[in-house]
Length: 185
Image 1 (cartoon, rainbow, N blue to C red):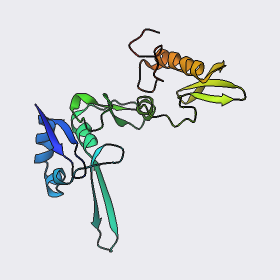
Image 2 (cartoon, rainbow, N blue to C red):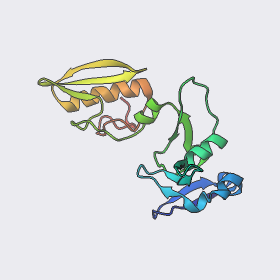
Image 3 (cartoon, rainbow, N blue to C red):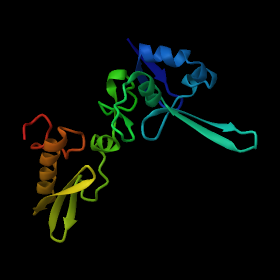
Image 4 (cartoon, rainbow, N blue to C red):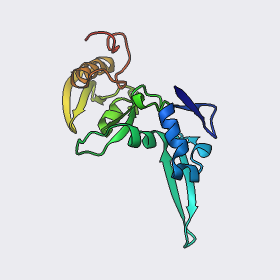
């Protein structure tokens, strides 16, 4: 069964499994700080709790607790990769905190599975190089040059093909008819 948690500053609700809901409402510390009553939506879309606690010396200490991280820490097995791990939403919805939608992964995998592109050209992995467009993809922090192309679209296609080859279909692919993850490349 699914449960919804109302967020203080948004119309949207956080979605969780009944098992995780029971844990959150029965956890002594989370009850003490009124975690459920003070959940808000972060500018990045996550459900979180934040409170400034006054210290004995008069200063304040800010405590931030993300709902998805509380759930993942308790209910999702964490692989021992020897790297810093982050919680990823498999379906991309940061308010869907069901156990089956959360997984521990590396930062590079989190970034690879976002559809955000800050590139001026609008294509991930494509840069302007004089009068051509160069496609570059990174694997294990090492750049792999995919060649030089006449158009940004051609370079984006090369990036998409190599990305699917190396990492499988991800949300970071440039959408068009030839790079749709449902179409075999």
